[in-house]
Image (cartoon, rainbow, N blue to C red; front, side, top):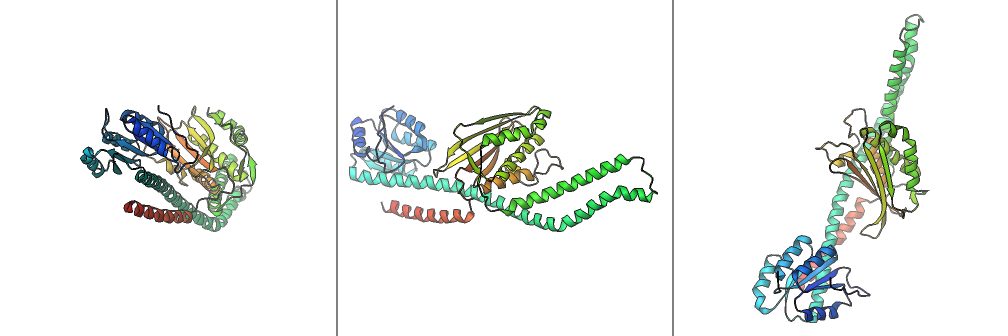
Length: 424
């Protein structure tokens, strides 16, 4: 592989690849621009394609001669476009290849063409515009992905907020009714004995079982209402508590040891050694893990396994995030979307008495820590839960207003760049 120029101060974070069978042209190009950009060179299309495969989207600009031994420059650009559709492609041609250059531009295979011998000053301007344009394309693509995520989070937040309002109303109107029902259930056995003259009923255990079951269901309803209401109240959590992920997971495994053993569920934990002490809202963070373990134990079959891994990952904005993966080998309905997992009344088990509000509460906890929760299918079976949380405790949860301000700013920049490129 050809050596790479390593400039000390870059004019762009993206690399340039120049492909030409004339080695003098390659060395001249590197001498001119090697101090300002990371430059890759190749003497034929095949070597150039291998460099594109190796560096991927890091390469923002491809300049290629048309006539070379083996595949032509136009053929290289066509294959390069399939690797990275955003890659800026410039064809460098002699006057005899004029028609090939025109055809390449018209078919969309290249951004523009340059005649040989190229003028260094003109080429410098073209390179700057091309890499600025590539940066705009990458940023626009990133923003579109972020827009889709934001819309999805907005819809989930709206749903959660609406459920919270509903839960507050249900709490207000149903708690009094439930209190009356509970009082009736408590008094029923006693009143029954009074009605039959004080004689003890023959099957007192029946009344005891009925009473316990009824009280248990009332407790479940009240718990559900409380969790729905709690999920919608906070806009941000105070992340003033310190803990280690390893200690929290050990605590959960010990807490649920009996249930895990009863279903023969295997839990494997693999954490990267560089995970720092976490700043969280302690009670909500531990509650989230209790709910995750309850979810897995409820919906997995005997002999299934759970794998928990975590590492620190830096995002595109340069922010360090703790990324946690919870993978299981449980069955999943083929027609269901994994995102349904965070709907408040969805359950994997299809049992009507298993409330799905637990995973919605986990989603909200991650959001209030400035992070996200996502789910996807695993092949051939199983589910992956991905939890991502910024390590910086001062990061606020994403708000849709921030996104739309950023979108407007980007569209203004995009319009300015389009005008510059049109003028050039």
